[in-house]
Amino acid sequence: MDVLRHDRSKTGLPDRPEYFSGTVRTQNLRRPSAEGEAELIAVFFDAGARTIPHAHANDQVLYFVEGEGIVATEQTRRILRVGEIAVIPGGVWHWHGATKATPACHISIKAVGPTNWDLPKKNWNEY
Image (cartoon, rainbow, N blue to C red; front, side, top):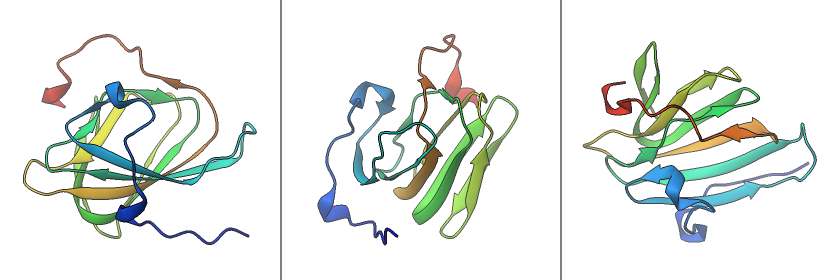
């Protein structure tokens, strides 16, 4: 059993900073290597920071633990607050981050597997 806690003092720059817009720090809580195992990452977004659009092969769960965040797909854009959880189905184009006014932190939970960061260029700020 793993017992994990997010901690801003244990963060670093994301492995791939080009996949983010704005200031983002990450804490790798659980980084397994075998496909299908659960990966957990605490992602700390400054106000207005977010991921670029992407799609995961598997479902992704985003559990908001600080601040106020946004999760957007091509169909919807939702504001999430502390204690709320978004589940994004595998294969769905989406982005997530903090609102323009408030920093946020979420725990990203997903099975190890590929992520498609090379999606068609769209005006994703509209979503």
